[in-house]
Image (cartoon, rainbow, N blue to C red; front, side, top):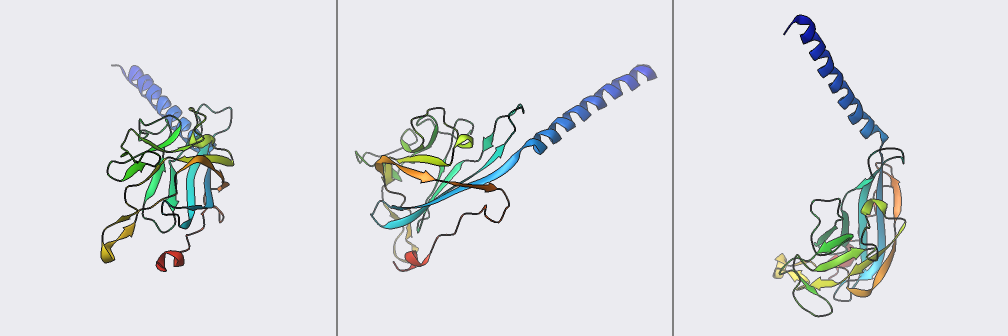
Length: 204
């Protein structure tokens, strides 16, 4: 290879690297990041009044950008419980095969179908958001969502004595919970959801 060919090849390769680097910078710079959360009252499977918390983050791109909006899994937590649910959509590799849209699948030995009492497993749809839309994505959730819960814990408590912990969660219902979420720029003062009140749990 002559010096001129080497220089040309080097210049072309360097130019490609600059283009790729520019695209990566543009991709990161075009996104606007938001945190979403909702807090609402509901009962757990034992009928105890609890606060339920939903939270997720999104990266939103302008309409002219080539990438689609993205989102983290939707996290569902129930006051006084150690059980944390994750709901996924088809954009997540972890999404299970128990249904379409935004969903969470059951776990063998931990969940059962509320209506039939039959054991739930990875093929059982336990929770879904906006279930009427099989193409629903977490990144596209508006300010209002519908949460449908079809499972209940096999046992609301794990362990015995001082080692016992609650793994109960929001009560199953044939009618979806209507939930209204808040949205704030990620990192802002109002981006974090309120903490659970623990005194209710300690009283038990």
